[in-house]
Length: 315
Length: 307
Image 1 (cartoon, each protein chain N blue to C red):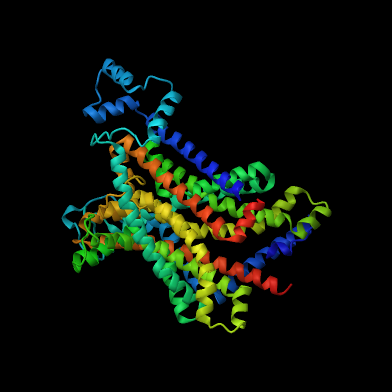
Image 2: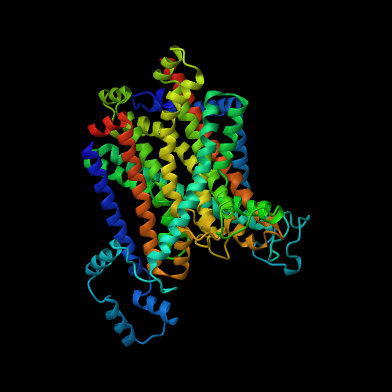
């Protein structure tokens, strides 16, 4: 098992190294000379003479070989120094931290809600296969998965903010401003969670240890809570972590619509404004979190589930 | 499944008969589905209708999607303009059809490329095995952990917005389910007795791949393609919504929705209609995928029970 853990950690490190190199290259891959781009962002004009550009290039250390620059950049990045934003001139890391906090709150609220609805609904649907409840839950799930969030969000703003006036239509002030974006974000994961919960619960219900517990005379409810739920939850928890990693930076559309100052919007506006340090730091932060969460889930799975542990030890 | 009836000998008369058998099987498959799975039938009809409407766009959409009648801004449905006019006085129905062509075709192109790339890589992974297999599967793990939208944003930052960037970005994230599925199936099929039998009978490798492996892989792959289509359609939309996908004067459903957003309280239908189009299309395709999947499971179960 230690070999498995070490291998996963090696993959993690390698992935981060590759991604960091790609992110480092962003300024050099575009059409414009990065020094010129920076000059434009800083001084607001493109027509600086060549001598000024060269002075700036040397001042920024951009005349050195690419690899040296990368190592330099990586060294700073590891200590959390991604330079200053072209737009606000403030240290990039501060912006990224505050955006990350907002995104974590939003993502946890959305996925927590999805999870809280999906687990009971999926379980009951599995227990009463073929019932009216089962088919209603199934139809709703299929619909939820196909709803684009950039449609649901304006529609919920229309109803709850403009017509009813219960909730703020945008912004990030206080708990009530979390509700609409979290709801809009939760619908698709809710659909997937419920489907997976139902399927895994059916699997568990048919497994020998549940049948054995039944034949020992345990009630359905006790069997389910003591033996069924714990096992049935595992796939849903995996899915939860996948979505967690995905939504931390992937909630761009919702964050833009609701003016939520999260990671998605930070990266998006960095692209629109050509604010490269913010873009780099944002991407690195998102990818680090995504890969970290996935690795942790795999490891937790290995530690918690003996069957997976044996499989991985054999692998 | 048809390939079970395919004779092993590559004799021409035999293979002709088997091909007619395949047509017959396909037809009875359609009949079976329409009898037993109403949802699948309905979803297929809805999706087919959408596709036909989009194909017939030049003949149905009577108005130029970008010509403006400023005096008629926000006007409601009429005999002339079936869904009314938008905030610039453009015909909503025409824009919906032309926009739909972009949404659906970009999604379809991406999906086809992703399916081909994924299937090839999955087959290679299963065929070569060892370190190559391990390497490819770790890449799959890695790619899956990136959000689609983010990869697209990353590429837009480097290459600038455009159709090429859009298709590239969505292909980069889209090939993984196909690769995983093909790899798993190929490993499974290669171990089957009928493959062994065909090898013993002296069938060539290409014959085996064409007549035994491919038909077994095609239907699961088609199922995934249908299941992924809805998701891709929504993702393409989110990029267009952010202004990083379709570029004006072209439009697609999500771009229409984004344009109408500032007028949400004044003309909610301009936001409602294109969103509904994405929803209906995505839902019908997903239902087709799930129907095919359920049908496959049923068939597997049937075969299993009758062993």
